[in-house]
Structure formats: C-alpha cells, structure tokens
Length: 286
Image (tube, rainbow, N blue to C red; front, top):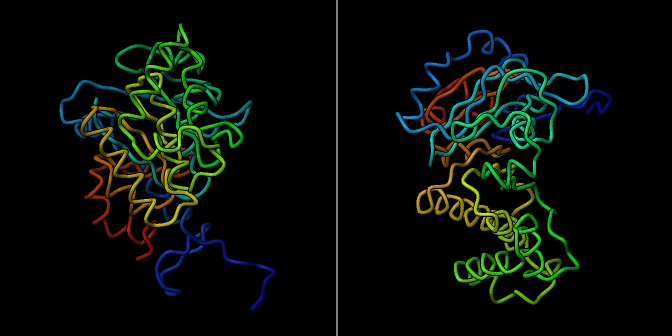
C-alpha cells in the first residue's frame, strides 16, 4: 500500500463505500450553489416562534472568513443538527452564535433579540444561550459538585448556583452519588453528563452542543442522546448541534442542515435527510 498519498475518510460503510474527505467535499460543493431559500428554512420551524435566527452571517477568525452568508432558523423547542465534511464550518456556526468567532457581517438573533455583538458572557446571562463543549472540558481535580458550581459563575449570588446544583442532583442521581468525587474519576459518559449539567446551572433556553458523541462508547452515546431528548421534550430547550456521527445526529434532530465550504447546501427534516440517497452517499457511508 502506498502511504505517500493516504486517503482521508469517514470510516463509515464498507471499503467499497468509503469516500475520501476530498472527494466528499468536491461532490457536495455543487449542492451549495443551489441551497435552500430562507422561506424553505422557515417552513421547517413549523410556525413556532423563532429561537435562533442567523441572517446572511459572515463569520470566521481574524481575517479568515469561514461562513459565507449563512442563514439558519430553528423554532423554540426544536433541535437542529449540522452535518457536512471536515472544514465545512459546522463548529464555526456554534462559535459565532456564542461569541467565540468573529462576525464580519449579517445578524444573530435569539428569541427575537439581536445578540450579534454581545459577548459570550452576555449571551449566557441575558439571552439564555449555553455552549456545551466537546469532551474533556471538566476540571478533573475538582469534585463533581465544584464543577457544577463553576457553571453558575455569572449568578448574582453563590446561593443561587447552589440551588441550581441541588436541582441537577435531584434530576440525575448518577451525579448525586458522585458529588464529592473528583471529576477526573468519572467514566466518559458521566463526564459528558456533568458537562451538560454544568451548562444547565444558568438555566439556558438554547443549548449549543458540540460533538456530543465524540470519544464515547456506544452505550454512553445512547445515554447522552436520551438526556438531550429529555431536555428538549420535557424542558422545551432548543438545541443546535454539531455531530460527527451524522446518522445518530439526524435520527435525533427535528431539522438537519448540510454545510459545505461555509455555505448551506441542503436542509430538511432530520429523518428525511437520512433517507436522502445523496446525503447517504456522501455522509452516511452508503
């Protein structure tokens, strides 16, 4: 085998179905030129009040523009999953919404309010937007309880954070049993539960979730998605997610967006995109 030109692939499907990342991006790029209209995106919200609205968003890092006029719409209490090839700008969407990326044009609205120029802390404290980072964001030498309390750093009084943490422990007995243990001793699934729970301390309405399944065993992946489903269905949280396991993400989400080279190539119901042969060929390994 010649290792000088290794194929970069997604590792999905059989050897016959695996495509290189470069081939996926080339095949998908043509779809971005005829992406869905804003009216089509609005239809996917099912007439709900809009929770998150990106209009003509230009964003990136410094002078590097990653997102080129992106529109995104998700209704209150809905879930949206972003999929696409590596480098498509999926995580940059989350970064832009939360304030980690530089917005060079366009607007970001949450709950009908323009938050484009707010800082990350302002978005969390006043707009109810929380960011759940990828794995390894817990503080391993701090206890589970101390990690949770860190999530309430913007609360006006420490007592408020403690009250919110108590509600988390009432909800998730698995964490309550380990409240005095160091977070570094938790299993992968328990750490992800702690990361999600820490974001809940500020009582957000919008959860930005970055790669919830990354690094987890299959049994923990199911557990994490069950937790997210409960937060959406029971608590009415709006979820915008990036998920490298495209099949799992689209099975979970009400809405799916396919990003290619910083533009929206395709959008639809999550289950509909799962059945789309072109999406399956490019991103689902079959």
